[in-house]
Length: 241
Image (cartoon, rainbow, N blue to C red; front, side):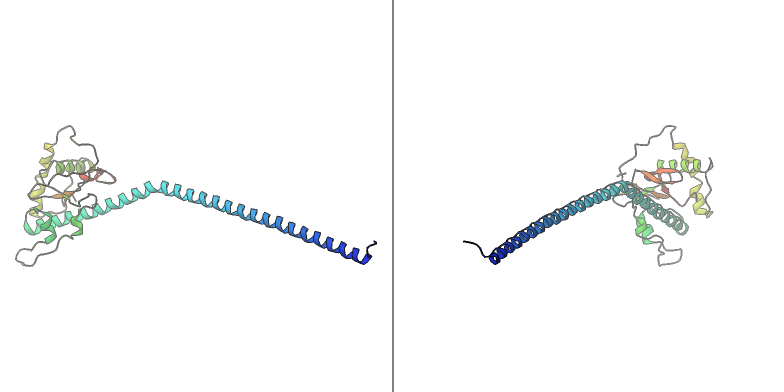
């Protein structure tokens, strides 16, 4: 039986339409797959870039850490010097008002009454009475006949080109104490009894009048004080200024 040409034309058009639709779907599927692949690739590149950035940040932080620690130590040393010199000035005022050196840090913090006055004069802040370089914050009290004080006098003398510097305070009480210092270097032996640096001095401060304070930290310093490069060798005293 012969097909109707009209029907044949319609069937041909339907087949062509189906083919075109299938081709379009395939193209859409391929395009979608490519898009998904590109998106996945972009995500992969972004992840790699993020990991690289994090690695650079970690490396930069590790490189900066020693410098940060050094700067922190330097600031603590500056604070220790500032507080130590406050203590030294308080000792000077105490000697002026009492005629003798103090015997405890508490006496400096509590203050001292000038002659003929009942009310005490504040001469030292409580914060300055603490050493920022030692773990317990306790200054070591340095007496006029201590070996550490004699070593400090020698260091100051070397710093001053071989001459023991004369202090600016000429009051009788200060001069009487200072006149005994020139003999202290005789207690030093020709050798050195210094132990290796590090750790802290945990010995008890002996009772009695003291002329200065020093840190209990035995670490090497970043800053220098009269060219001295160890915390426990820095003696803060009102003499030699």
